[in-house]
Image (cartoon, rainbow, N blue to C red):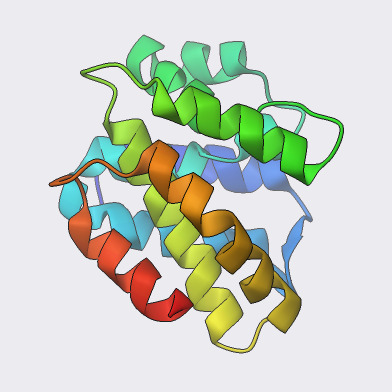
Length: 164
C-alpha cells in the first residue's frame, strides 16, 4: 500500500476514534470504501479513507489540507455532506454541490459513489432494512447529481442491482 494511503488511513482511523459503523469499528467502513476505490488509484484510496473526517469528526478541511495538500482537501470538501436542518435538507444541499462538480474534480463523484456502494452493500448484507429503504428513496436524486456516464459505471451498476 502506498505511503500516502497508509498515512490517510492512520489519520482517518485516529480522527474517527471510537466511532462505530453499526456494531463494528468505523475503520471497517473506511477499508470497504478504499477497497472499492483501488482501481482508481492511490489518491482515490487516500480520499476514500478521508471522506468522512470533516463531516463526522472534529477534523477541519484545513487540517486535511495541511496534511494531504490542496487537491486532496478540495475533493474531501466536495464529498463532505453540507450542513442542514435534517438528512433530507443535508442531502439536497450535497446533491446540488455534486451536480456542479467541475471538470478535473470528477474523482469526488467516484469517491461518493464508492461510499454509497459500501453503505448499500452493508445494508443489503443484513443491515437495518430501513436503511436500505432510505437509500432506495434517495437514489434517484443522488444518481441525478453524482452519476456521469463513463465514470465508475461498474459502481453504479452494482448500486442499481442492490436497489432493484
